[in-house]
Amino acid sequence: MTHGLLTTSVGSFPKAAHVQQARNQFAQGKLPARELEELEKQATRDWIAFQEGIGMAIRKEVLKRRGALAHAAIRPPGGQLDAPTREALDRVLRWSERPIAALRS
Image (cartoon, rainbow, N blue to C red; front, side, top):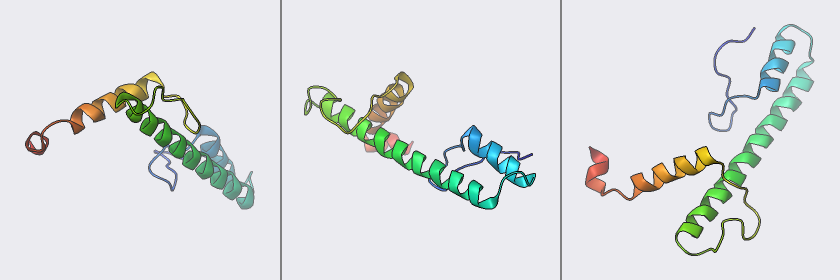
């Protein structure tokens, strides 16, 4: 059994449960290396797509807040931000508006 936090090669996102399960199956000799490799590659592609999508959604939300867009979903691409992501964005924007001297303390 694998222990610890498994991450992708793209950032430090946790591996999906199905990838961890596949790694355990591989370690037990129940899954060929090629299948595990393909599954890991697809999981990495999925995370890249997620990062690109959330990045676009955040950029568009900021443009909306600054008055450059009427609505963040006015045109694709870009997904919707959930409540926790909006709250995190609010914290980052508040932090970024602090004077430089305050950021050093």
